[in-house]
Length: 256
Image (cartoon, rainbow, N blue to C red; front, side, top):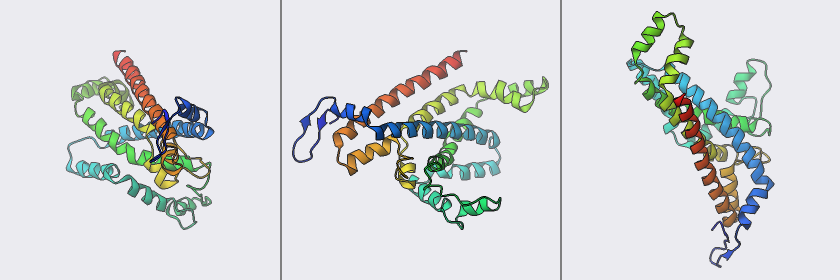
């Protein structure tokens, strides 16, 4: 389909690489790529860091920690559409909106989180971090369970502080988990769709339009199925390349 002008029920016409040229030269796709990179990089970095910190805080066999870990993990098992609607309520732009009430306590003016072109992308990023961090936390917890405790004891005897133990013991021991999380975060960054679609639909003025929402718009709203197919193939290629890059750099660090 990516090499054809698709006309349902009327027959398709072979157009070669025209659909790919349309994708690569279309300014809306360029904007979607920029937004995808910013949103994906910020969301991935924030979710991985917060997931790692949560794993450090919630590691242990205590029953209380088990309950807290379960509670923290809830955003992952909650439907993305439900998460989006909850955050739409939190982001309600009026002065009596939940988040605006909170910032009002500090003397700040109400913010139109999902309607301001300079804020909307970061508002969506926050939701993505909130819903993804617990997923990475579980992977890091599994990695922490395999760390040799004697290494911590030896580091403590040598007088190493907490941050030194994390840098010199914990992070090197978590390299396999870090590799897995890096690959997952990189691929998921390119496939961001539901959060954006539920919260903003790609608006305002295309400020949150990402690659996946642009594909959906072209294919199912404008009926440009050939262009949407070409964009999907390019997304597949980018995902595969990004996966190999993540594996390459992670293995190089592990070798060092």
